[in-house]
Length: 466
Ligand SMILES: [Zn+2]
Image (tube, rainbow, N blue to C red):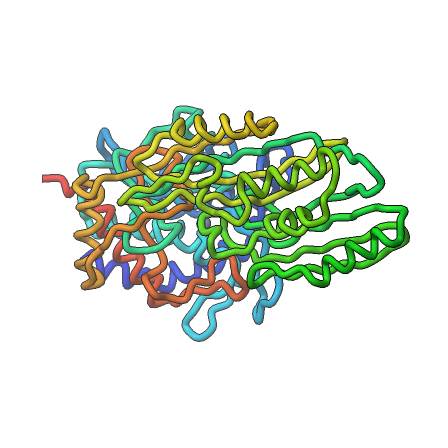
């Protein structure tokens, strides 16, 4: 019955996803009543109105998030998703905001990440109640509008005392089930960087974000002596860095402009990238700068160098569930006689934050680095024997025929924002992954497969009333 009800909703569900994809909802400047920009707010309004028309009780949570609910019961089970999207970027073969249905796929920014799954949640819940299934707990679809820029929406939901789910999942990563998410600590540290002597660095800047391996850094070296500039140019042309790095050096008046290129990677997998600052520090060490500027590069090389495991920072650690700690240097900038850089670490789920902050802050102190900013997100770990995991595993196996193995990741999902939630779906193992890429698309077949899994998971978690 439930499956039949869902099947009959296929066209409506497809149309709803197409419609919601057509509302550009990239995060932007805060405005009156739109804390994360106009786009996310518009999409929130549309979704709440749509859910209400479907028969849900709804609430706008301070223009940051919203929820839609059906059913009765003291407790509630939830699907968490987000309506904001990353910018469309370049290289699309279709209109990223067109919500086109082509080759049995829906195309557009956000179709997978994460508007499609939110719509599926609504239709899955409605199908349960339309099929006449009575549940012990209420079913709530919670949608935020700031996931891509820090999940402040869900923090707001929790802060405002909105109800927390007895159990839930967020279809915003991949199948089968992510039961462990590493803890994340991000530091911005700073140290003096005043020039001394004739050869000085007048500019140093690189990286795009703390959670992306720095792929490029630019430095300007000023020296009135032509022979010294030539020495820098010669050193640059003979420098040999790790595979994937490259260095260009150009003379411009009495300056030499250096551009060091590495390779980007996500902050949770820094070992897949080549850090441009690590390369630059290696190159600069050979130039023998005097004073604070020379000091900075040698300190950086000693503390970080080419490492991505935090060994020389005193925080190398690992556990069986989630693997080793990773460390990613993302952004560097010199200004006002100081230089600062970010370091983003993902630590194992069985460790405590203080296992990282204790030793590393000691090393920062010893090396004259001042902590300017520190952000900590605790790890998430849901034991395999918990009811939530058991329920999701059962449904996944029934629907796909595959075992629902448990995954551990270094990233952070919405699951971290409230208790009793894990990431579950929507991308199947080995599948094309177009999230955050050009031509983001999702087949109607997989959409329906997700709808069946979500509906059955909700029934399982909310339990059929006796
Ligand atoms: Zn997402």
